[in-house]
Length: 138
Image 1 (tube, rainbow, N blue to C red):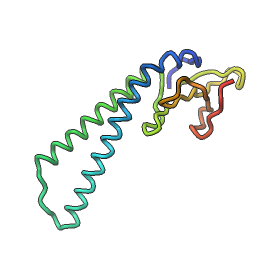
Image 2 (spheres, rainbow, N blue to C red):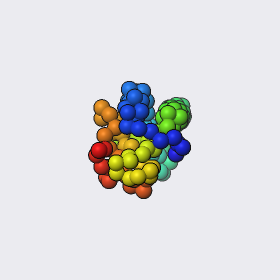
Image 3 (tube, helix red, strand yellow):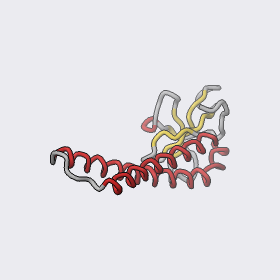
Image 4 (tube, rainbow, N blue to C red):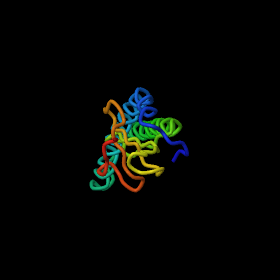
């Protein structure tokens, strides 16, 4: 986690870039999940059929595409981390930023919690809590 503490306004300033990054990584994650599922289903089909034939070139191409998608996702996650955020859930598009909510918890670090599609950061939760425990910012 970043040593820096963000204000809600600072996170709001990052949202245009965060939205672009999350849209990209969420899309790549969905593609990778679907491709991985297809490869697993095909692998199971081959296993159940006693070792049926597989188009090796197609299998290799899809496996390489899966690797490429994983690389793209990791790169975007690193970029978000460099901004100071931590992606908590790729399917929901959750990103947390360390911050202080002095009106609520005196000098205690909390997570300012932003979800893809929200126009600004409007919620926070404790470091040992998650999305389900989000509370509105004062």
